[in-house]
Image (tube, rainbow, N blue to C red; front, side):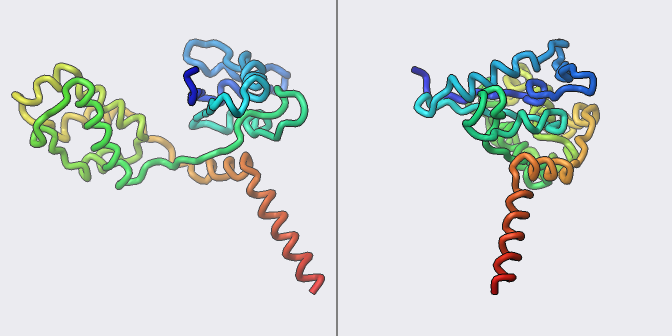
Length: 218
């Protein structure tokens, strides 16, 4: 009735944590202390058995610690076998930490989004931040941390006073950004995981082998 629908599993590693050496599930990473891995079997059965193509439902997951999840559970193996053994996600995408230009674009887009939430139109000179400077101030920060900084500074009261008070200044965001720990640049680690979960290493190996056999025949 409501299709198309997107189901988002945030911090999906909590649902698909593997078993520890003692045989217990290692998925108690939720802030509430709840063991999210207890929903693992139900999610896999729902996605692989209950959902049909004509339902037009897309299941997505995101995490910044994919190595905490069981690769066998994350990667969809195909329709054969029990649904709880087929794996979850059919495709994987890696989004690297935003660079300087990316952060400048994020600042502008997220700032406009925040202001429009409370007030439809604000004079341009009241929002004239130097986004290049903002990108430098937020070096090492994630997109989520930039969004949090904007939400922290641009309260409903601050937005309502933009027309009468001093225009926004870059310095207003410095305090919050200083409190945010920089995100680790673990691109190599994530790319390695992506190669594993996507099977690209196996594909490249098979292609290399096929080329070698072709040369031998010549």
